[in-house]
Length: 216
Ligand code: SAH
Image 1 (spheres, rainbow, N blue to C red):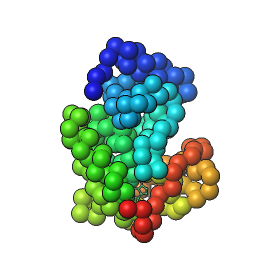
Image 2: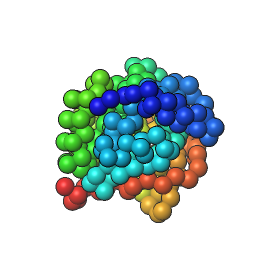
Image 3: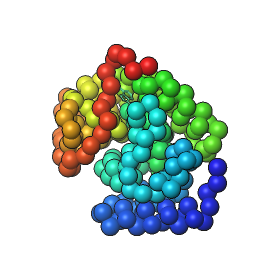
Image 4: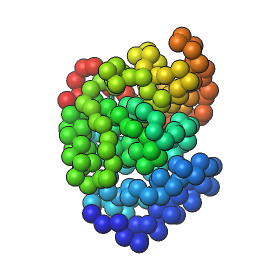
């Protein structure tokens, strides 16, 4: 896989368009400017890699729209060295953005085929060390908890309590909440063992978070 001047130029334009849509965290923008998003799409779709659109990645799933990735990452306020748990590895593009920003990334995928494909892709083609897991993200990763940050990249009908439990006090969770056609982007800050504060950040559209049963 090659990252040519042409790709870099297209990426610069994409970053410019994210700026115009009010993404302002330079750390997020520069991470996204570095990562060759076209590596994450099948080669026959290369020309779509730098449009601000979601894209199918197989198993009925999508790589999130660049704007959505940027928006969620900005809300998450990730600092270097933090432990970040992502639910919904998908293509691992979002996970790589977090890793590029210096986070220690733990990411869970529910679908076996996608997990295996993404895991070998990341290990063979990318310089990032990601900790990838095949599991139900609703349960989090109790043996690796607590986390500084938790990011959910699929539509959650409710806030999974295990994930709140696995968040550090002072930690932040970003979660698209809602079972219908659109979700509300929620930022949750855990202020004490049994206390959270929530802010709403607008409507988005995600593929649903899957439950325990099926989909293998
Ligand atoms: N973050 C991804 C896009 C995620 S799309 C990227 O950057 O490409 C949502 C992903 O969540 C899909 O891959 C889907 O299979 C996965 N998913 C759905 N339900 C899940 C669950 N319960 N646990 C973990 N992953 C889940």
